[in-house]
Image (cartoon, rainbow, N blue to C red; front, side):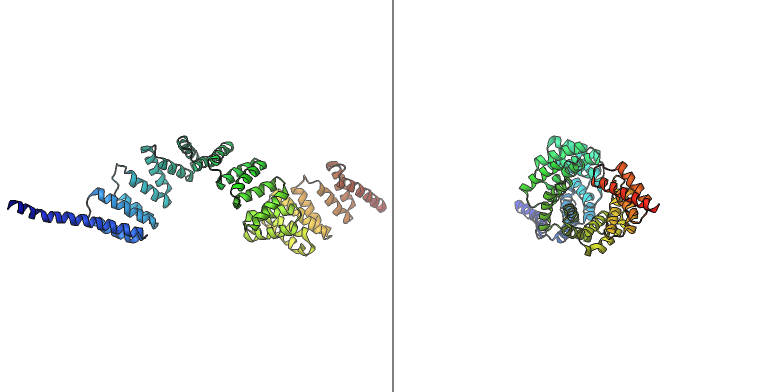
Length: 427
């Protein structure tokens, strides 16, 4: 009889435990099913209802972690951070909760908060590679390039990761340590030779060193393995152009355009390359495409104008307009101002308007006094205006400063004889 009473007394308790266990299983299963269908808002509702009847701290923590991860999936990072903060115990570091919270701060753009958390986690778990990598990345974003470089080097001393080697290279470049930067980028490329970003980063450094052969060799090797990579193709074309290997540059830029590369850089350098080869129609087309992308670049306007002025007489009005537009757009950059004024002067001179050409030749010489041939052009304009004494002054100056034995030098000698004859007649 006593055993029967004990069994009867135990039945309600077993029913409660079984029911509670079933309820727990039910909400977890329902939440998992909602998440499997990517219905994260529904999963959050289920988890919220489950939390209302839970007092156990460990269980509340587990549910909060699930809820926060669902909130992060639908970009509710602030809400996820609040959920995680609600189950953190002051003075204690729960690595899983803290890691999720740090990621929330990163995703929400709260970099100082994220960096502070990852710094604490890195100190407590110095062998945790993930925390170290996150800290290095945040130090770079925060502009602490020395700290980032130190952190990156510490990581690489344990595990050579190509992206971290590149990160150290980027830090060194920011700190003006060009050779160190190049060394780390090269280490990264050796481990991951098919990373186009690393090839581009190395190329940018080599451009500064004018090591065009180094860029060409590296880019060609990369393109043999990844022949359809247009950004590396752009680097190769620019290197050929700057090396003044215009024929090879032309083939590369032609391939880029054929592959549908309509970027500003490709169009601009294609135009410069075509202009150097006197392929004016190609240059005009490429500069025109670049102009559609950016109509505020004075250098583009100046080169576009040169191409138009060299092509045919039908483009002369358009050429004049572009030269004047370049003049309006440019800052007082001596090299560019020289090119614009020299182009305008040649344009007006070819139209037999020495009165308009002369002031631009004079301006061009102000900005580019190294071009002694301008002395001849200025002198000739004055001669055509019958200002013989002024013309003679410029011619004689050219004989002193110009290249003896050149075509200009012989031309000036003939001009001086002509002017002296005219001056003698005037007497």
